[in-house]
Length: 179
Image (cartoon, rainbow, N blue to C red; front, side):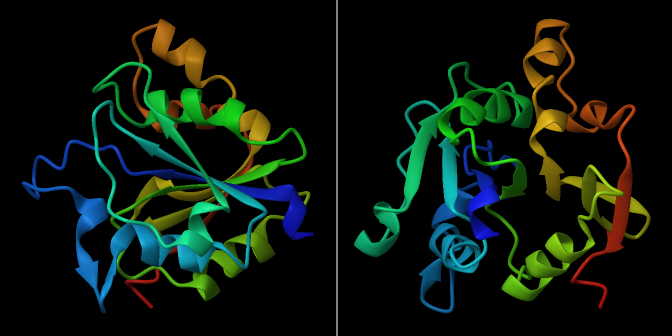
């Protein structure tokens, strides 16, 4: 079952509020990026890490380097939809369910992602995390077809990931920070 799951890890954000690269922040002796890759590894067959043009990612252990694909946003500063557009072709065609995550999720656990997977039945196309009644499109599990219209949205000048949700069946789950 793991083989049908993949992940897109968005590491190329501007970090304007933080003032430094979030992927390089350390928690428990590991960078946020490496920590999330270790969480994802037992759950997905492949992961694409997207970075901004010119962004230097923190060092990734050799065991993880062989398992990930690195992508670069083809257009700078266009937000998460650009990362999705550029990442989807890097995922194998067998991947039909995709975790879409940012690299700044310090509370994320393997168990939480497994819960999202457990909820993703034939009844749903999207399983999103919700915190204080705000649904996070970047801490979610999607069926691949939900993500495919991202290029069309960008071409129309639309940049909000929630616009991908229109017409799809979604489950919402309270965030791990609230539990």
